[in-house]
Image (cartoon, rainbow, N blue to C red; front, side, top):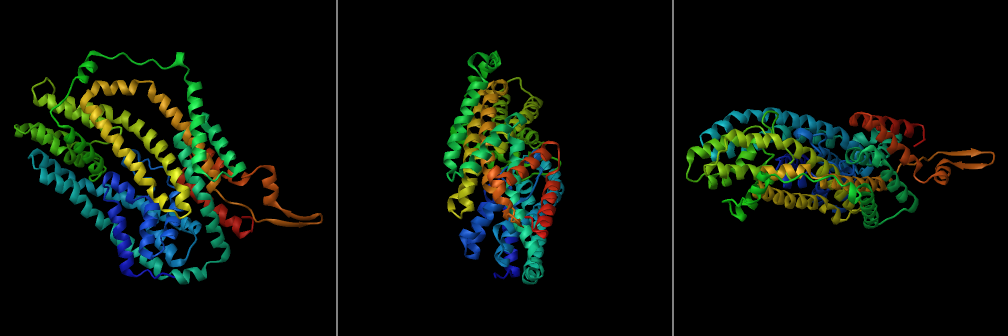
Amino acid sequence: MTQLTLGVCFLAACYYWFSWWDIGMIGNIVTNCTFIGFVFGLFFGDVTTGIIIGATINSMYLTTVAAGGNLGSDASLACCIAIPLAFSMNLSAEAAVAFAIPFAVLGTFLDNIRRSVNAFWNKPVWNAAEAGDTKGIFLYSVLGPIAFGFLVRVPVVTVVLYALGKGAESVLQSIPAWVMTGFADVGKVLPGIGMVLCATLIGRTKMLPFFIIGFFIYAATGMTSVLVICIFAVCIAIIYVYLAFPAGLEPAEQPETASAVNALEHEGALSKSMQVKTAIRILFLHRFSNNMQSQFGPSLCYALTPALKEIYKNDVDGLKDALTRHVQPYISEMTWGNCIMGAALAMEEQKCAGAPISGSDISAVKVGLMGPFAGFGDSFNWATVAPIIRSLFLPFGMSGSFIGVLMEPVVRIYAVVLGTITFRLGYQKGRSALTQILRGGWLEKIMTGAGVLGMFMIGAMCAKYTTLTTPLVLELSTGTFVLQDRLNSILPGLIPFAIVMGAYAFLRKGGNYMKLILIVFVACLVGAFFGIL
């Protein structure tokens, strides 16, 4: 049994703090459960076990939509507590999942404290922007929130983990066997519940048949190759889109306006390297200042400072005005939404050159477009594409392979490339062209195809990772009656299917996710107590 010393607990808490520096795309890699499992596996000397535990917890958190910047569940804290405890208490991966759930909720509470108090930095950063003090903007929008995050997260996590680790052996000895069985059963159900949550976000109800098809194709055939499942799903998605959007019934594209045509001619003063640099700065820096009052505004302003300095290099007052303009409250999905920032900088250039564009015009474009692009970006990227990519890598992680650790780096490479492309698109084509993109019928095709693909894949993954069975055996006069064998003869995967469909119906009717988790806990513990599960 691994001893969780105070030093070990402090290091785990510091990793948790680092993971929530919110370093944009890097931050999302280090908060990924499978990656955390790999890191702690290295630390505790058993990488394979660490990856397996991390990936098993990861199966509950395949989707990472944080609407309005609000953290739904803190998977990072769940892992930073549950994985060290699993090594300390020799817990199975399934039992570790059960231990992780309460701390995912605690992490949400800590993050709300962090975002509330981070509003303290707004006044200093606004004053720095008005003075043109870019070093002050960096201090108050980046370093200040990082420092406060240490105070919020590290002491609490260190104390909690140390207290739990210190009593690990006595706790294990006092827990009845049926409780541990119940915890293991919870771990066999929760991965499927997490994937059902993805399904409610990915597809409309009319796409549910694709989920069911994916589930039973896996349950009946036991396909072991995720690649084969993916190829099959892609083919079905292509066929469905082809049938759903016949050539003669395609949504009509909106005619290009004169302003959009003129926007295509904008070449801009920013070099290609500066455009790429600015796009990447936005993607990596925008979340540092995340708070309840100004959201991403202050750190976005800092991300834009090199480009704004280049645009207003001979106009100090113009630079101050621009910094003040961009430090204002702002929040959107920042990969597809990066085109808004590109268009805003193009307008800053035109304003600096004497075009009849006011500062309020630039702010209006940002505010007017951030909502539509947030809706599309969250739905397409983080509720559809990212879960699909993660589901492809998840089986490798749950078998202990390092390939599983690559799931989040692949997702984030995709996001960085996309965000760089969209930024340059917005910069070169301007706001009118972005409006045309939102009106184009191709978005509906992409969303539909991705929805079919996602529902099929998630259905198959539910069948693969919802592994609850019943051990109930009855001795009858006619012989031994094994309930699980009888259920398998009726329909393979019947118990998991009933669970995931019940969860789907509960969530679609507006049921609370944490209430559903509580129901699963109670049902599994009761079932284990009576020997049914």
